[in-house]
Amino acid sequence: MHLFHCELTLHDTLFFATREMGTLFETERFIHNYALAYALFGDTLVNRPYFCDSYKPEYAEDLGHLNDVAVYVTPAQPLSWDYLLITWKIGQVSYYRKSEQFGSESKRNYPANIGRAKELAPESVFEFYILSEEPIILPRWIRLGKWMSKAQLNVKEIKDIENKKRKGAFVAACTFNPLDVPVGVLDVFDIVSMPPSSLVTNARLDGDYYEVGGHGRGLPMNMRFTFPDLQQKVAGHGKK
Image 1 (cartoon, rainbow, N blue to C red):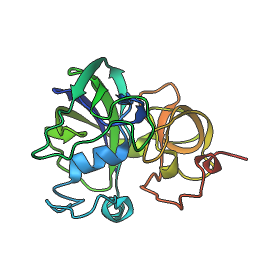
Image 2 (spheres, rainbow, N blue to C red):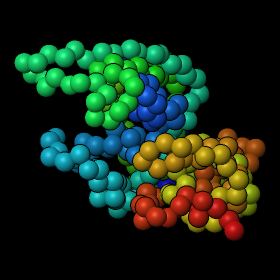
Image 3 (tube, rainbow, N blue to C red):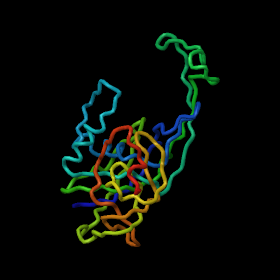
Image 4 (cartoon, helix red, strand yellow):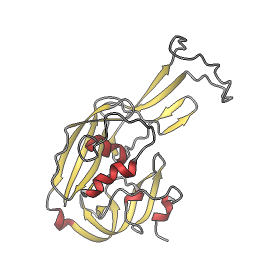
């Protein structure tokens, strides 16, 4: 098994609509592992077509390719970050866009053509981990988010990982997707609510893990992309 510690530095503003509150569209300070997987492996292992004729996501089909080759990407947590608040306005130009009577259909009390986007600022830095059964080559630069923002990747392989296997209680070394962690491992955690599935941070776990960074910090073993029924709740992955 190969374990890589990755630092991601933004060179553009990063935007994705985690929450929509009236005219404010807010970007969460965590980056989902689905987004990272597409950005890292979209042209290789995931192999998405250049043109998609549907807006329906196909996470299970796409990211299942990573399970087939035993590659897993954790979500990214911020090391340092800042925000920029961007105001935008769409002009009502009748020759290419149908004129709208703002608020007439949805009964909202704000116009539909203005808004604000809370975006992660350039030079924000994040960390995450990649586990792979075989050696892999990772890109130096990737693009993320709605605007395909440019980000730089610095990778360091953690050597001698087989001698870092442990069993017992430990503290999470990073943010996790609880759907991808073996059932019954999570003890205590904070939930980060964001689509398409919530993440957990400040987690304490009990089970098999790789020790990284010392002081009882680690990554759970046997993590893989998992896509249960929508009716299954994240809380079901905690201990009873």
